[in-house]
Amino acid sequence: MRGKNKISLQFKVLSLISVLLLVIILLLAGIFSYILYVDSRTQAELLVLQTAKTISLMPELYEAIKEDNLEEIFRPIAEQVKDQANASNIVIENRERIIYSHSDLKLVGQRNSNHTNDQALIFGGSSSFEIDREQGRVIVGKVPIIADYSTYSQVIGTVSVEFLEKDLLYNLYKKIKFIIFASLGVFILGIIGGIYLTNNIRKDTLGLEPHEISSLFRERNAILSSIKEGIIAINERGLITMINLSASDMLNICEKHFINQHIHDILPNIKIDLVLETGQDIHNVELLLHDKMYIFNFIPIIEQEQVVEQVVGVVLSFRDKTELKKLIDTISEVRTYSEGLRAQTHEYANKLYLLSGLLQLEKYQDALDFINKESTIHHHQTKLLFNQIQDLNIQAILLGKLGRASEMKIHFEIDPESYVDPLPKHIGVTEIITIIGNLIDNAFESVIFQDKRNVSFSITNLGNEIIIEVTDSGKGLSKEQFDTLFAVGFSSKGENRGYGLYNVKRIVDALNGNIDVINGKEGGAIFTVFLPKGVK
Image (cartoon, rainbow, N blue to C red; front, side, top):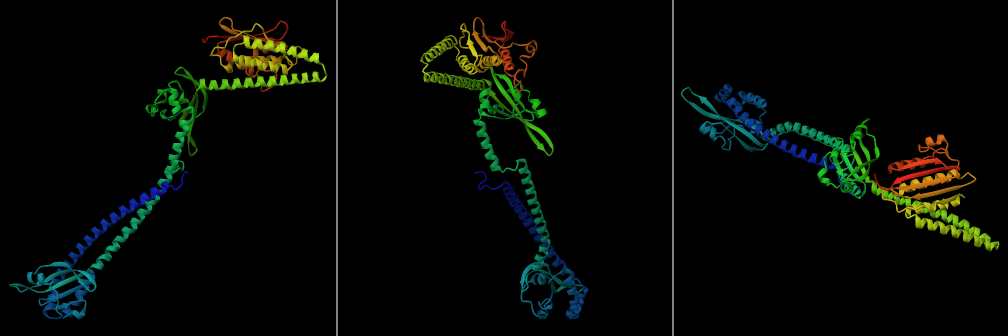
């Protein structure tokens, strides 16, 4: 079943876009955060060292140490510097590690137990490092306090500026928060773009999902392979985009070699440009290819963009006229036999009713005479039809017309001198049925309202021609009727009639024959058709 348990194109595209965006955003955000953290940490280490150096060089610090009044003189300055530098603590110690100043007043006057002052006290160097405090991990910048005694300098203590790492992380979070919101905006824009993209793709695919398109493609190939007609599709430039198997077989070409080739490479005589320019269908065009006649139909492929229609291609369908003609001939032959059998059935049913009535009236001699008469007529007709008319199709036509004439109370006679061999192949069943059938029907209708209802038929094939003659006892034709006899719609029987003689004339001309019409000496009309036995 189409579409069952299938993932939609939109879901696939949105999932892919979401995963890609998340990976890219997380990767970039991680790299940016790491770089920002390293940079912030470096800045913090520089800040604590610079702040410590600045404090160590303040004259107020020397004065406070000299007067041993660090708490009153320098503490306000230290607090101000701590606030400006956002430091968590400023610690001042002497050479004996006695704490002079600290944010925790309880530690003032106590000895520092760690040995982080050694580098500053012994070597007079500055350093930065990390250390754990009760408040958490801190970044410490330690600088020596050097007193200048004119002739020499001496380290008299240290200044430590501390910066809580959690404060650093908090400042980092405030900066990253912008990145998070920006990334969220990019993600939302990506999802919106994905939805627009999938909707645009579905518009181009006529709202079909990929699995539906593949299913339709398989169905299309199966249908095209099963069609007996040749199918060729071309684009707006006349390049072949598809050829089905039947077309390849009819044209004796390989499908793969002609894809993306111009249609004129295999069908040079078709006027495909007219269909591409006008967008109009063209039907039942006969073309001769490889000594075979084909019937072509041209259907444009029209794409509508808003209110404008554009021809984007053409589908050519064609079939072998020979096969189509065989089918038409078979249908015509069956129809002729059917009409003949129906007429004979009706005629013999009436005759059986007559015999039944004569027997019930005990008119046995009359019944016997009727049987002998019908037997003689039937024997004469049968001998004439089956011995002298060698073509089975003409036999079937005449047999049906004999029954039809009996129904219409018309005396229909076949000339005893008639003789014809099986017709040549170029005269098909449809052609001979149209010629003989229409001429006889026309004769029947011309005598139906006459007192004398006589119609005669003759056919011979002497020489190089087949001669067919139908004579009736009707009123004949006027001069005006002679002029329009074979025109489309000519009829003396009312509207929507008058195609029989037109079709006869058309077929006779197609077979390179002639048709003559004259009025008989005793009235009525005589139609004579001359058909060449060979193909000119």
